[in-house]
Image 1 (cartoon, rainbow, N blue to C red):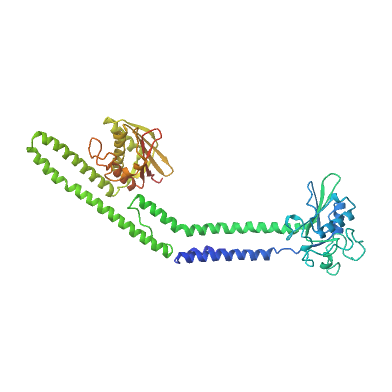
Image 2 (image 1 turned 30 degrees about the vertical axis):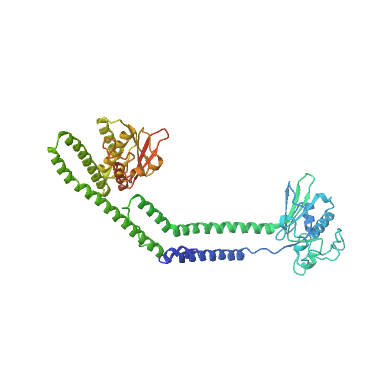
Length: 488
């Protein structure tokens, strides 16, 4: 059965998902039933044993176990006889046989139909189902051992034809049926306990528990593996959706594996991703075309302004220069968004130190923080532009920049911190949108066209990473860049 279940992934590779679930559930039920059947065959419930109290009394008195019994000592006695008339009669017979005070003798009957260890009483015997049989005519006195019974010696189990019938034993005070525990208080204060050898039903219950644990040890790992196998396609879609949210150019979802429902969903997902990619590409090309075509009218306008009065020419020249910078920023953004990454090994620590040193040489307040060694695969010029944008934003809006480099698991983490006022939480993500600015004007003295952070995130995502902004508790903003490390 287990071997057949292990082959199910190959057998069901092309079956619909609902058929897989149905077959696996059916196989699990059949396996559980098969284990139960084998359990019943290997360890059937033992029959209710028949014992003569004469052997119990002899074992309690001498401390030597008669055949079929075992003797132990304990500081705690078993519970006493419950409300059952039959069990009280058995206990009274045992008290008389031992010649001890009633408080020194205990008798407990255990097993099915005997909750709490009180004994099933008359209701537990087959020929007294209603439990209303009156007490035996001899009352609490044990019958003489030589009257009405010619059974085996004390402690021996009755054999065929050598003792009373089962129905006779039910009505005898000197016979007990089932799993019991009898105890005698010793002068030392301890209790001598006699019970059937082999544990009776208690041993059977313990064996059933071990079988259950062994069955769980087989079924649970198999169920865990099958659950992971069934959930694999769903996890694949979750990962694909997360990649698409970060990068519209993420690889397509494989459509050659999995059940028909998964393959159909993967095909639809890939078509949606392709439409989104075409939409982004068309929008990017439109922006690039507009920005490129604006250069020629601006050049003609600048040429014609040469003949204008000085006051008009100077004012217009400033506007034209600002428009040229916006066009250059737009074309740079389009390049970062659409240009394929030229992969090479980059010493990220050395690259960051070069960029911060260049910023300090230009008089900008840029400091180096923790710098751990890190190597990545990517485009060095794109990473440099990304760092320039982040450092420039920190200096422009936060008065200074502190740059650090650490590693976390399989990622390099670059942090650029400033000491500015920070941003409202609602704008921490919006500032990455192209042409969005917290300060709405496009004045080059208060900021650019709103493409710096969008361009930086495009570079990071093209390298398999991302950029997030968070506010510092003590004030200021932190730009956190994660980039995958080069496998060693």
